[in-house]
Image (tube, rainbow, N blue to C red; front, side, top):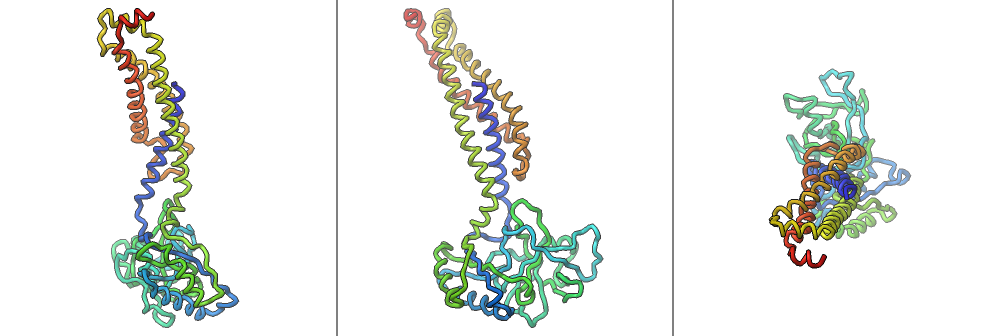
Length: 384
């Protein structure tokens, strides 16, 4: 009985910590709206699309035709979707600023078509997003995230600042917009400086991911979009067809499975501990029925009889909880690497688990105690 209670506490503590982790991850601000967004990949073969103009033509035709489909609210291409890569960085320098030798001189970068950021639902802080004005023959522009803007322009606006990207002798890019931080690297990795560039002005990064915002279920538009791409290029395959919600969920899939597994075992252990405690106390009451009958016959009250039985159940539970707390304190350290926003020794989780087990133990003890307090002493003594 004691071991069952201890095992239940260990498993419940692990499940509780994983539940807190999932709640913390789900509460994080993503920086964009993943709902009603369909994504797919079209990797253009180099042999067929050697020139940047050919790729631009393909993207423009696909986006223009996809936008005409019923239920489509926006479409755009990007070189990389959020949550798919922790890296893909490039060197950068800021005009008029001396670089700190201890500061990593790199930034994440994403190249996309004009409506990509708007389609993804990225929130604009100041300035403007990349749009149709930003072509190959126009002044080079860039949109940066809030992390980059706060770091290098802590007391002023980043708008109008100039950056070089990838090459110290390359052209200057003017910052025309600042957007909220998007969790490009997943839920748990720290934010890094990030820049968004028009593909027409950054031909070294090739967009492969089509992003489509829909009014209804994204899955309903998979086949219509497939037909659009086939009309533009009958030989062009598509792959990685997923919703943005699925991509976000995939980032926490391992933790979700661990939470479910621990929760299932914890629930089973709690059930076994409850049944075990009830069974042990019921058996004890049956074995001590003559003693209990004599106590009642000699004037013991129903309340005192109940207290004796409940105290025995709570004593067993208390021993199990003490052992379980020690085991859980050591065992949950193995979860530390997968926890987020909560420590393995989180007091509130342990208080909640101990409170739950104590309440279950009290209920399991109360039923046999209630039956014992209602014994008829004359019937018990006669039966013996």
